Length: 116
Length: 112
Image (cartoon, rainbow over all chains, first blue to last red; front, side):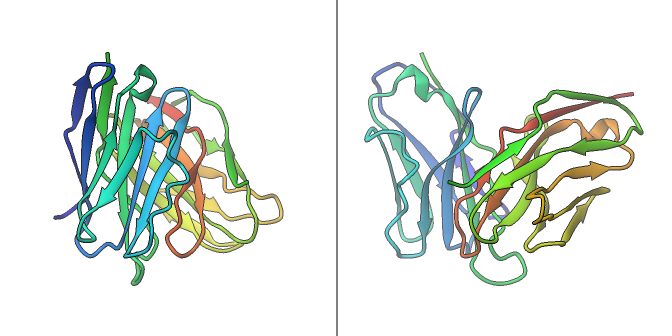
């Protein structure tokens, strides 16, 4: 597609439920990133996929968070047993390895997660 | 570790005023530096970037110069418009598609 697409745009869930957030990167972009934007913490890196390499999970806040990227394209971020402190906007970005726009990250509009 | 510090907001300016948003960084080696902007209700967009010392990034009347000696990348615009009202984020990363390290963001409001 023309840009990074994220769904849903808004998600309201009850504490303890699992949620799945989806990211569809720009076609041809080999790198995909998840970030979290919250009032108290600003923008935090969560996880990063680069081609077929093992993902960099160093930013995941707990083992309740996981992500996968299927076929080198679409990614799903899963939060299990959601807590109120998980409420935030989850942003996805993608970038490519070569060309004029190399290493520039393009962001989706985000998924706003509210845990009640 | 790597970090980015930018001035606290919010910043409120009158239209046509001069804008400076300070940004300093702590990093090993030679990171690339970025300014991203988030307009109300929209996603993050790249505003400008610089990849090496003394490079100047510019876009839409905004400029920032990569100053290695002061580890800074201050954002400037000579004459702001109401449409510039947004949150501005300074960020760094390294070559090879590494995750961005962001500052906390500075909210700018421009009033007519």
